[in-house]
Amino acid sequence: MKLSAVACALLVAGSADAYSTPSRSDLRSLGTKSIATSGPRKVGASMKMEDFGFLKGSGIGFEDIWGSGENDAVISEVALEKTLNKDGLRYRLNRTEKEADEVGRLYDLPGFEVSLPILGKTYLGPPKVGSIWEALGFTATSNNEARQEEKLKAIEKARNAQKGVRGGEGATMRSKWLDKYGYPRLVGSGGIFYADQLSTDKVPMGGFNMGKSGRMWPIPEVVERGAYGGEKGWGMKKSGTAVDGLPKKTDM
Image 1 (cartoon, rainbow, N blue to C red):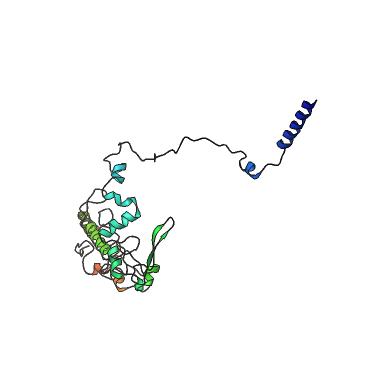
Image 2 (image 1 turned 30 degrees about the vertical axis):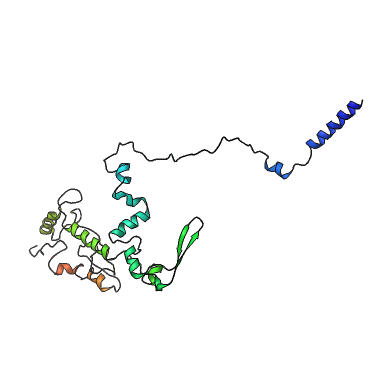
């Protein structure tokens, strides 16, 4: 009889514990499952680009495009900017490192470096620009003297091309067209390179260099010389020669 009473008491106590209010820790662990681990697991990068050598040497294979050499510059914007700066060319309207050092910090104001979370060492201070307007982007330009030289080289290369864009005749085609139609054919003969005419140019560039022109409002003198009646606009035709130096036709 005493054993039965004790058993009943234990049963009631167990039932009360089973229906007791759960704690917050019990609720947090509800539905979770703990998995035993044997130790840290190292996973290396496994994603790779591969053409299995089928396109090797074709010019469009992975090694041809992204292999070591001059193509490394396009891997990142930083590398591209440094490569262009070596030739004196600007990237994204920014001065080259040499040009930036020549002008120094804006208004000679001081700057300082701080160590920031995630970003690491960061410079805080005025940029190396020639004026506040350049810093704001209004007068910033990529058209420095090195770029202007490259435009002039490209114009000469197109004008003196011995082969057209499709492998046909080059400069010789223009003379035939001049005799037949009264104007040289530039399209398809390798004779067109568009050199944008900018107010920062030292000499007129002439756009497409086809002796055409037109303006809607007053423009800087160097731009006018590259358009309208200037030496690189239709004014070149008045001088007797076109862009490729062919003589002016009088017997049409």
